[in-house]
Image (tube, rainbow, N blue to C red):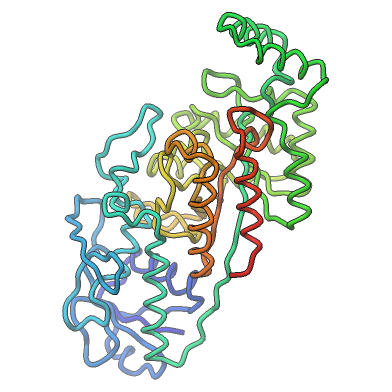
Length: 435
């Protein structure tokens, strides 16, 4: 157990110290603001504040963790040991920057509470991110900082540190289970008329042959995923859209028996989560209805989610999930870039900056997204593989967590996604290779 002295114990301090020491390093911490207790303690101990008490191991503080509310903070970047750092500390600090305040600022997405521009789908623009602006978005900076922290602790104390292991999770979004099948007569005829009007005869033939079950639907990739999962023993998480039909929500109707059977069969071997519909962000009642629908299909409580279109608004989206008893969210990632939106590869509990409290919602950040790579970054499959393997190799070297987002249509036979199935195969195979 590590004793931490700090003049003022706040929820912010307890949150980030717990995340770094308990969740990441595996070291229990106890806080005290009593100088006598700190002096009398014979075990490992550190102080955190503006100045040290004596000659103990001291970590200087920036002040962010004793504040309340959100202010526009001037973040001045510098470099230490080849790493970007900020929130500079005094000469008495064992580290030249406040690792705890810096980690808190990044992991809580403090900057997303401040005024910023959003895209047409009300999503955060990565170009405004501190990480993107300062070119460390492809580095899990908090994880790297913690490695240096561990070195400091080991050089000063005889303590046991939990050895972390690389972890890979393959997550699959199913917002449109099929391109043509189970869409109903009306949607089918409208789709065919549009293809005829645009003289897309190939799609007309493809639609007819698919509906007649002469060929497999181009979005149907579940059998492929099942084989790969069994062969490589993959940890898989699926997210299903079961909303009413809207301009943006166009999945197969949740009433369709075959679609329900598909969801149930996948739920027997993999984790199932809800993909809240496009408008559920602003209408919490929709989220509740959709969650109950999915639970009725799988016959168990659903506690995982990933926002459709990755629509994530702080803190409203996460509050709505908690209100609906969803405690694991996989939406933390850029919608227009790849990398680490919260500057960590590891899962963490959501801290509500408005209420100044750690919540029960566990956030699982993803690193790469097939649609972002193809549509936003204009990557070809070969470039995507190179980038994914490079990032995965780095995450393995620091024993981090790698979560990928792919869609069933990119892994099927759709011509628009030619070559992307091989990207996925190369990625999951690499996840099983030793460093």
